[in-house]
Length: 72
Image (cartoon, rainbow, N blue to C red; front, side):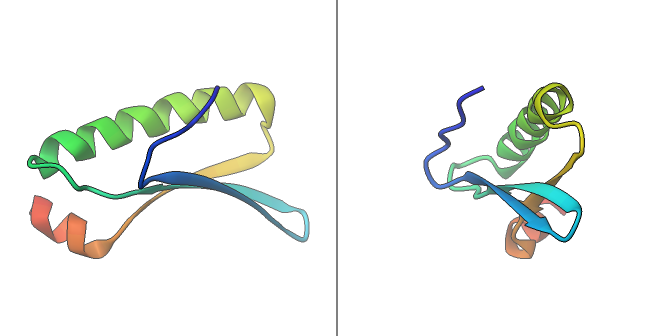
């Protein structure tokens, strides 16, 4: 799966035996709710791909708290 999300990105890291991937999302459009729903859907798809390719890696979705506060 190729991931190219412009302002968004996925980072992979290792610390000791722990392997993680972090998807970083930026909400830059007009509808934060729509972008949040898209981000969750994409994260779900990436999780499925990671379970196949790197099942030991844990995926996290990173969203700046400023963007989350706009959803409330």
